[in-house]
Structure formats: C-alpha cells, structure tokens
Image 1 (cartoon, rainbow, N blue to C red):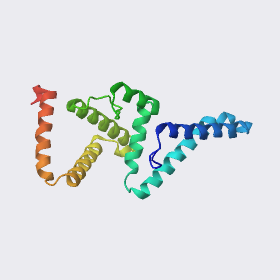
Image 2: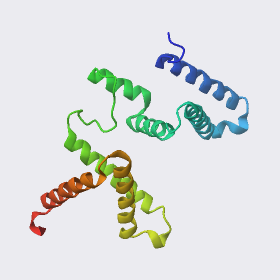
Image 3: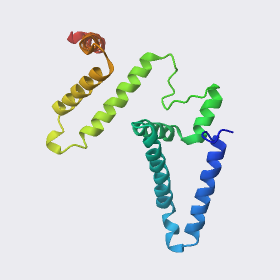
Image 4: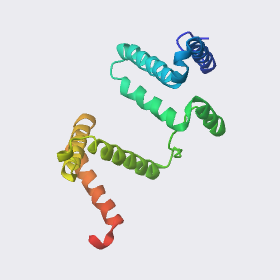
Length: 178
C-alpha cells in the first residue's frame, strides 16, 4: 500500500475511530451530550479545513476545487453513495448531476442553472440597494470578461462566437420576439 494514498476503507476506519472517541468524550461529560451534533460538525469542519490548509501549502490555489468536490460529494450522499454510484456504472467517476458523459446539451443547461442559482443567491447577499437586475448583469459582464481574458488567446473572437450562440439561443426560446 502507498502511504501517500491510503485506501478509502482505511480512511473510513480512521474517521469512525475518531468519531467513536469523540462520542466517548461526550458520554464522559453529561453536560455535552445534547451537543453531539454541533461537536461532530465542528470536528468535521476542523478536519476538512485543516486538511485543505495543508494541501494548499503544497498546491496553492487548490482549496476552491477541494471545497467544491467536498460539496459535490455531500450533495450526492457521501462516500457510500459515491461507491454505490461507481459500482452501478462500473466507473471510478461520479457526478452529482447524473449527466451522461457525452450529453453536452444537458451539461450546458445544468451549468447554466447552477450559475443562475449562484448568481441569484449572491445577489440576495448584497445590500438591499444593490439587489437589482443591473447589478446581476454587471456581475455577469465581469465574470465573462475575466474568464475570456484568462482562458482564451483571442477573447474578442470568442466573445463574437458567444454572442452569435446567445442570439440563436434567445431566438430558439422565443421565436416570436425575433
């Protein structure tokens, strides 16, 4: 076995032992028995954040990816659900969305819905005077501008293509308006 890559069974064993030890500590202090959920949550958040901090030192910029992957794993139901999904498909990969690997159209719609939900949530986290459609539009402009500039050699060409596809999508959504 490679010490840098322990098996998931060993990781599960370590986590179960830690949580059982935590349960023993709580059971030994009757004043904390009603707080087991809060204590377990704090413990798990500590393990996650400490692990990610350590990984971030060796791989700067990896924290957002790791947090997103943890969130995705939680959404699908945790490690047991992932193992079940992998066994059912015979694949090492899993997906919260359950989108087929060759279904680009559904993947695009899924990402669009997720981005829209995140934008809407973010908009409502702003001060009340900023919660307006113009703020959301400016946020989308900033996002697209930054993405195009960072990821593409010819951002203006990509923007032209994006606008063309966006016009086609709008026409398909409501042909009577165009």
